[in-house]
Structures are given as C-alpha cells and as structure tokens.
Image 1 (cartoon, rainbow, N blue to C red):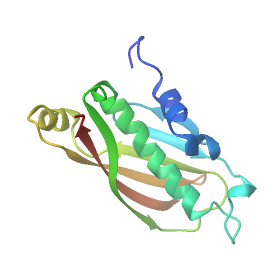
Image 2: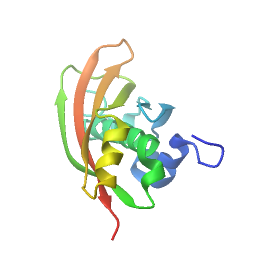
Image 3: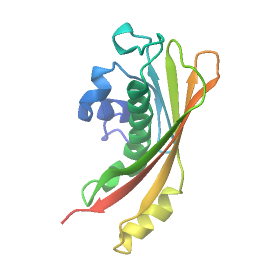
Image 4: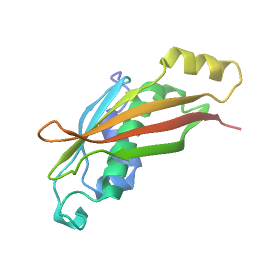
Length: 150
C-alpha cells in the first residue's frame, strides 16, 4: 500500500466488526495473499473443543476480504466489493489456533479490465485453513464481484 493508503489489515478490522469480535489477527495482507489467524478461544469452541465451524468460516471469508481490499481498494470509488457465494469443505479436525491463507484466483488486471468495459466482474479467492501443525483442516472458495456504483 502507498503511504497515503491505510494498512490493509487495519482497514479490514476497521470495517468488519465480526473480525474484531473473533479477535482475528492479521499476519500478512497484500494484493495477492492474506494470512489471518484465529486464536484458540474457549468462547468460540464447538462441542469437541476446537474452533466452531462458523468461526472458521468467518476466518476464511475475512482472509478473502483482506485480499480483495489489497487488490481492489483503489477501485472502491467506482465499485463495491461484495461476496457472491462461498463454499467450504472441512477436511480434518481443527484444534487450537487456526490460520487462513487466502490467494486471489484471477489476475487483478483482468478484473479491472472487465470493470473498465462496463461489466460486473466475478473472481474467486481460494482459502486454505490450517492447524498449527500445518495440517489442512478446511478449504474454501469465495467468489467476489465488484458491483459498479450507480
């Protein structure tokens, strides 16, 4: 980000109250990749003592939003980023703190070119959720759009 743009992580936490509610930690956030961590918190455990599925979903969706802010934050004057759909697969039991790593699924330039052409682009963000031992506990794909402002 430039010196005049706020930090991506700060922007995410300032605009997404649920990320603050879950005490999500922004480890890394760029235009290509974001890494967020959900600390181990008893208040957000499920019936087997690990992070609740809803908390893991929010972690992954928030990581995807951080990538979108990083990649398209300069476009918000003319388009609103919106999640269109999301899919999650829970692969292994998650215990303790978990980390979500999100990556942009299409080149930024392609998406902006569609917006420039008057279309409403859609693009995937892929997310991998891991335990502290590196095991993949979940995988997500969130499809986002940039809806042109009226």
